[in-house]
Length: 325
Length: 250
Image (tube, rainbow over all chains, first blue to last red; front, side):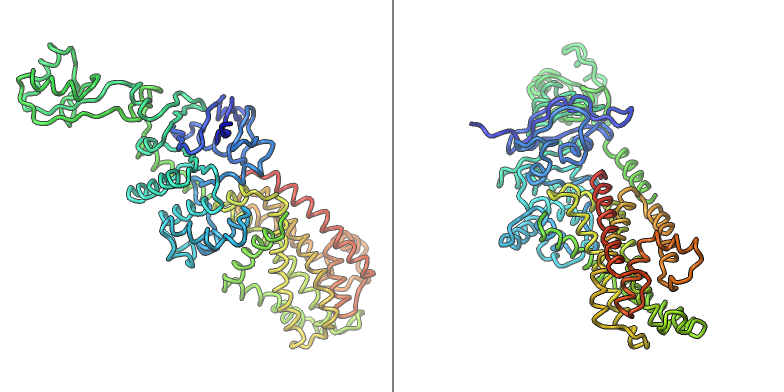
C-alpha cells in the first residue's frame, strides 16, 4: 500500500463576505516533496495555508493532511505539521531556548528527548551559542532561523512556510534555503511554501501558480518554463543595424534593442547561436542565452508581471502601518 | 488536557512578570501605597467605627483583594500583546485544546496576583495591622479563585479586542465600579439602600468579605455564602472565557 499523500486538497474555497479569496483549488503534495505556491500578493496563498493549518475554516471543499481530515481532526493535523508564519511569532521576551522548550512541551515531545531535540534544532540553524539570549536581541535573520528551528523540534511530517524569506537580505535568504533543502534531503520532510519571488520558486520540486484564488498552472519549474517555450537570446554587436537586417531576412525575427544588446526569442537558443555566428558575417561582441524564468511563465499565464522589489517595499510599509494602529 | 502543558504555559507568564523588574517593583509598591495613604490618612477620622477593628487592619484585606482585581484583569492584556507580536498564532496552531490555554492564563494571572497579595499581607503587620496568620492562609484559596474569575473576564474581553487601547478602555470601564462598589474601602453595614443593592450584586463584595472575615474576623455575610458565590462566579466567567477564546481566530 502506498502511503497517503502529505497533502490532498479538493475543490477548496473560502469566502470572506462578498470576497472569494480562494475559488475551487485542488492539488496533491507527495511525501518528501518541496511544493510551492507562487503568486502575487492577495492571490489567496496565505488564506490557503491558514486553512491547511487549521487556523481558518474552509467555506467548502475537502482538506486532508498526512491522512487526517483537517476539519474533522484538527488536533491530529496540528501534531503532524510545523508552521513558519509570514510575520514573526516568537515570544521575544523569552530566550531562544525557552521559546523552543515551550514548543516541545506543547507539541508533546517526550521529556527525555527534549534537551537533545532542542540542541539539535539550534545547532541546525547555527544558533547554539545564543540559546540563553532573549529573542529581542536577535536580528531579523536570526529570528527567522530560530522559527525554523522551532518548527523542527517536534519533527513534523509537513512543514508550512508562508513567505519564508520575505524581508531577509540575499545572503540570509540563501542560507535559509540551504537549511530547507537539507531538511528535505536528510529527513524526507515535506515542505509547503508560498512565495511571490520567482527565483525562490525555482527551489521547489513542483509549483502551483495561483492568481485571483485559482490555480492557473501546476508543474515542475522546468516544465512550466518549457511550456512557455522559447529561450531568450541577447546578442551584442557594433553593427546593430546590419545584424537586425540579417535576423529579419534570414530568420524572420524582429529583435528588440535593449541595453544588453539585441534581444529575441527562439527555440533551442544555444543551437541557434552557433548557427547565427557561423552564418551571419557580422562581428558579434557578446552573446547571452537565457532560459525562460518563472517571471516569463507568470507573464505568459496571466498577462501580468509579478513585481518583486517595489510592491514588496510598499506592502512592508503598509504592514508596519497596520501594526502601529 | 496535560497538566505539564498548563504548567509550562503559565510559567511563561510568571517568568516574564518576574523578569520585568521595573514593573515588578511598581506593582508590589502600589497596594502598600493604598494602605499607607488611605489607611493612615483616614484612620483618625474613621477610628474603629462600627466594625470594632482599627481602620488599617480593616483596610488591608480590601487592598489585598483590590490588588488581585487589578493584577488579574490586566494580566489578560498579554493575549492582546501576543496577538500584536504574533505569538498567539503559535499558540492557536498548537495541538492543545483552547481550554488548556485559557486555564493556563487564569492560573498565571492568579499566581502573579498572589505574589502581590503576599507582599501586602507580610508587610501589613509591620505597619501595625493585626492580621490573623492562619486566617490569611485560609483566605489565599478564596483570593486565587477570585483572581481566576477576574482573569477569565479579562480573557473574554481580550478575545474580542484587537488593540491595547480597546482593551484598556473596556477594562477600566469595568474595573472602577467593581472596585468602588465592593466594600474594599468601607463596611457594608448601614449603607444607603440603593448602594446596598449594587454592592450585593457585585461578586467582588463577597471575595472582600470572606478575606476580611478570615484575616481580621469582621464580615457582613456568612463566609460559606461568600465562598459559594466566589466559586459560582468562577464557574460562570471561566466558561464564558473558554467559549470566547475558542471562537477567536488568529
